[in-house]
Image (cartoon, rainbow over all chains, first blue to last red; front, top):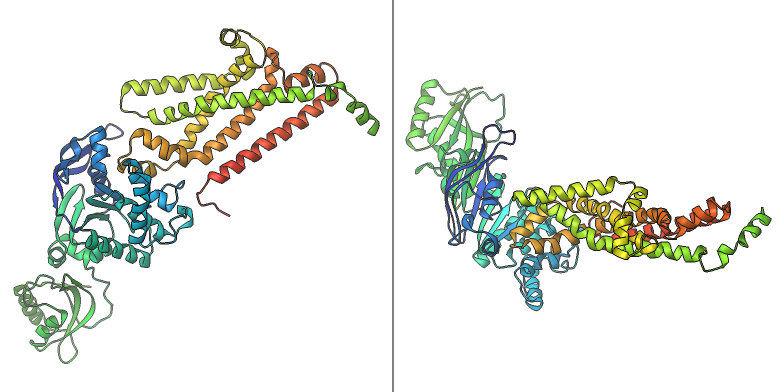
Length: 338
Length: 233
């Protein structure tokens, strides 16, 4: 649905110094009908990427193909027509204060020249779809943050775009509202078969709703793939962020080992790890960890405290054997030294 | 005290129509109303043009923006009293006369348009850029953005600017007496000040204060009625 081919955007430096490379040759293909997450810290190039996708910014070089048309090559009326194929949802919704919820939702249809009767019918459908019934005649100032974002999503969907582009859609919302909005987005994908791109810095958003994830760092892609594969790859940069290890408790008289068993064919759960330690006459306790089920598969990062049967830390030789076995099983393990 | 007031009340300027207090009030209101109609008609497009062409890509448009901005600044720095005299050749060319309310209105409009246009431009700048871009991303044309975003979103501010300009124009009309346009300013100067009739000065001041308060009241009410933004209570 979206294909980026060598997308590069270079901004001249304001002071006349070295130019700033916002996007350094992005190649990316996003399949239709899925929820794609694009993550990165601020300054990674996320905003520039969105602006290139909607033709608000012309790339320095490369192609930006959305539903078969090269947005980067369009101008004027053709560009405006192509933009109607992309629905946008913003962090702060960017609704017009002078319009009611219903009038905001109808706005893309008004721009596209849809008749009043058809607009009203479509708005009624959308109000129902995003769960805004009864609030459609309120002005944005009379709505809560979550309701405002529902209006924003309904407006993004109004012109029946092929792609819904969400720029930090939940970053200004509280936890419960975030959950509701993400549920809504996931639900829309199921019901409308729309392609969704979510740009975010929140890993929780990716874990909750995305099918694929792409990590943008300093204007280049450092990792991309299906969420299951990316989360389960202990060597990739994203797995530690998707499955973070909480800080370990201190003052434990044991050898502490970090284990990431996302990719292992034999170690499928944290129980398997404990059993492996016990088969070596050691006792293993999980002292900290994150365990997630992504795509029906358990991936986890746990911290094990290893002791022998007299309650003392296991020997160095024992540890070396254990680490070797873990390595053979495809578990990334590392001793934690205080 | 009461005798003085009774004596003042008998001033024929309060009771007669021709060139009296009430006719001159009407002349002031007439000059203000026509000037403001012309000012909104010309100033709003100018303000939008200043906003839209600021930082344009085309060098020609950028130059036009700078020239327009320069003319606006020059006209705004003229003291109105000087401007109205300097414009006498222009007004006589347009209206055929160099004196009277119609001649004064030309000068008033030329003074008020740049003033209002700058205020309108500021009103438009207060719209968050994200809201304009959101509508551009829906595929809106420039004209659609102006009609559907810029004007309605800035409307409360635009009404406030029209109110401010109206009050400034009422002040300017006092100086229209220098081209013999009539109005409360000329009455207060010719009869009140030069003719030693204190009651005329007091009466014109009270009337002007009432007019200004009414204009402000109506302006604030209208702005409030179209303002749907959240307000701190």
